[in-house]
Length: 340
Image 1: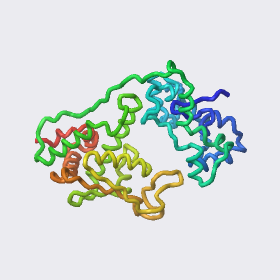
Image 2: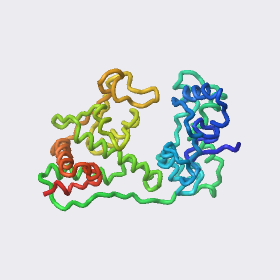
Image 3: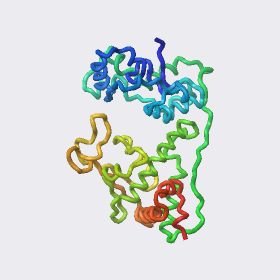
């Protein structure tokens, strides 16, 4: 069949999770095939009750009614490609941008290094190449003519900060609020925020960062101008977002917080940090001990007005005043309920 390339450069027609491969490989060979996929990618494709992914080029209204497809509907690269009417990222004038979900983690060299032995061409073609998305896109891009490449249509960032209708009870609260305003107006280190993919990436970071600030401020252990919180406490209060799932993902938010004077460190407490699926554990297996601790220290400017203490008091009072609406109000910096 004709090769089908996803918006982000994966080869849909050869993907183990696609309907194409599920029909191509018979039942007797599937188990061995899926074990090989897991060996090289870290994930095992299982035949569920549905027939497999129909691909991100399928319009939303034609996607099967199955929860699996929510990830396609939410994909920022798919949204960007659809909005700009391009087949995939290779056809975009901003390619390669920092906001695509295309990956260079599945090159032949990187996977060989990961498993500790060199992968031959046949193995790479059979189990890995379909996920070497950035390489696939670069090959497509290099073969295009200038008139086949489109610049993305610009979008504008929206900031939904609620106007205050009163005054904070003390100056430390006001200064803490000003720091939160600074964070809210930031692009959160997103380059290309004027594209759909960039703006969607910003919204994801924003949701996670504000939830982290909420958890840190309410549930962290405060000691002078330092704050600490363990993985179990983070997990218990994470909803409605997902926590960073690996050390690299945590590093992203650590770097963002550092821009605003919050110096953060991830302290690993176990050599069994990751699950077989590659996600950070919450607790050490067969114990209640946390697998990691987040430690934060305010820089001298923030220390002057006891930023962590003020944040804790503001959030505690907000939660007391408006209950279940407190986090929603916090994300919009709506502190009117606690103003004088």
